[in-house]
Length: 251
Image 1 (cartoon, rainbow, N blue to C red):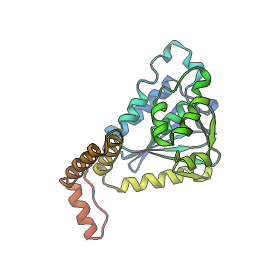
Image 2 (cartoon, rainbow, N blue to C red):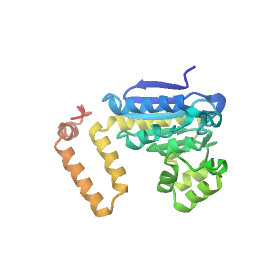
Image 3 (cartoon, rainbow, N blue to C red):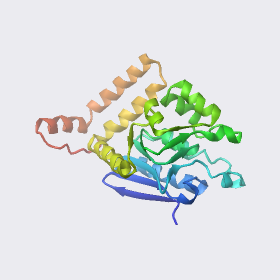
Image 4 (cartoon, rainbow, N blue to C red):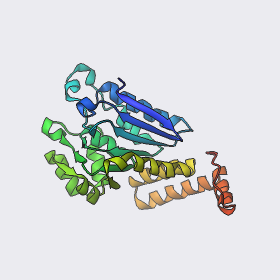
């Protein structure tokens, strides 16, 4: 049985963690297969957006603790999480049930998060004598307010879907039967947008978050001027004037 199932259709790559017997806890093979899929998203011009979900009753409960005690586990955070950090194309996390530890870190590495009403979020590494190793200490306080982020990190506690929405951790809370439909609907809207513009939008926003405002504004201006010189920019204006769907060329 494949530990990760990858499906591609209509410019969307759907990555499904397939270890429901361990609530989609990830071992090295699983982490590498997910990273391979994100490499494919980044390199294939036909792919425009990714969706990450888990099979069964959980999104992902992080790293498989039984596996992490083996010698093979050394360096397991060195590939997937940097890949997520460097992606220029959007990823949507479709979260049901448990989303803990490395699962939460993968969700934080996505651009948009959607969860079911029964979702639970936590960062339990502190209870194992660790800290998050997949950028959780840095991403979580950038997504939700510092106080709640520190409480989760210090205590290893959990929050439910309602609190996740209130804190801005997720964009939408839906019923389980609507989770993938909502994720695909948003992905489909992204696919309609100009591909170069989407990538520039993501890199400009993400890089700008780490800059002083004055420097970030200059970055925005550079990105804007670059896009205005592209064929897609001309096509977008022409398609709008002609009241038709644009034919994007990604150039």
